[in-house]
Length: 265
Image 1 (cartoon, rainbow, N blue to C red):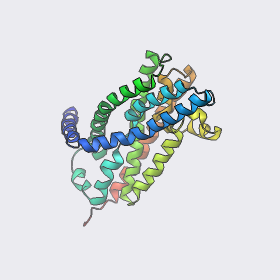
Image 2: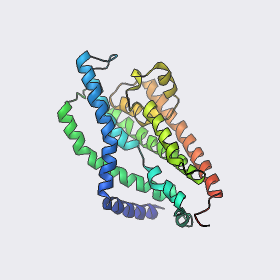
Image 3: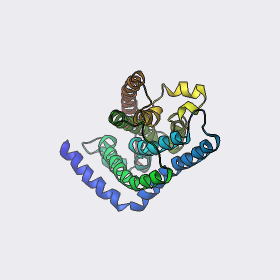
Image 4: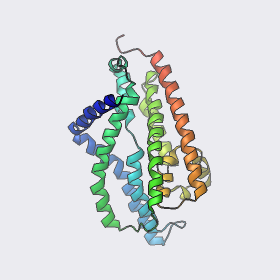
């Protein structure tokens, strides 16, 4: 199995370098919204002094860390796999002795992620000198604790997106369904605005959904703003949602493959 993943990595890594323009397009797509939020909320905080206790530096550090967490936990499986179900090219992958989504699709996403992170670094450094954030609250312990959470969050997000992508076995509107899912992430992950600034109802619901694990929870971990109990609860929620994501994906995939029929079959 190691040799299989090694070969898949070599192929997908080389493939990603062939689509550099596409890579840059996705990178800027991911960066535009957080940078706009950073600029807007920082400007408001500078004028008012603070926004519900959030100072300009709080917003700067929050969104600077968010840029990194977003790249670590996001995925593009809907864009790299749904069309294979719809146009029938999945047939060739189903006859191979490896799972299409849990091997080649997963490695493709990771290769893409490594390249986008490489592209993010110089942009992040430029933003650092422009906004001059004060990261005095960041401790190595929080950074180390955030790494396993972001890894688990990536797999949760990947499996949930893969489950939605697998709905293409039944409907051609899978992209619209995934856009709705993405809107939920935007609302409950803390990307649009830190969760403490959202209505109480949104905060309460977010505690039980996986989306805060994608951004808000690792951001707060890195910034050192969580208590020990909150960290433990976050880890427990991550474990629970990982199990839910695995079960959900496996069920949707198996049901979809059973009734799959390639175009022209």
